[in-house]
Image (cartoon, rainbow, N blue to C red; front, side, top):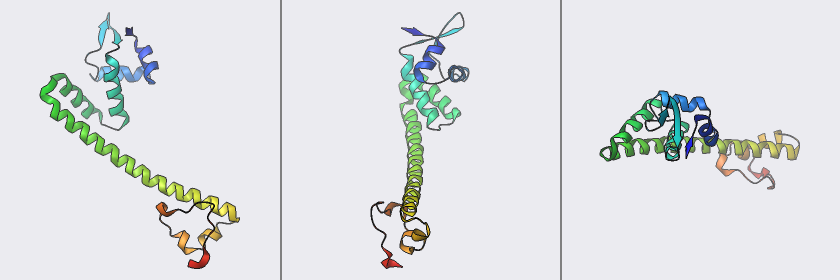
Length: 151
């Protein structure tokens, strides 16, 4: 089956301009053209998903281009492509780790404000040194009563 750029964009959840940009940057080497119009086929979707993944995980366009060029060369570049993917996975894992750290901080603030609201004042939480200096990964449950014996 064949698809227009607008149909593919809608199916992929991206703008047609993104597909045009990919094409302009030579990231869509196997997309057919009929009378100058891009014609996508079912086989193109796997490639589009890879491009979308690499772009959306922050791989710089020059590295995506390198990946595309290597892919066109075939099996002789398997190791080089693997290295690019491995590096990107490491970058994504670092992003995930950083976001998880931030989520812990937000969880702490969520607990902090819910507890302050429950007790009618944030001074209750602030005055308890044990809770005020708590590491985000040691957040008590909201239903736990505050322990003021550590003051």
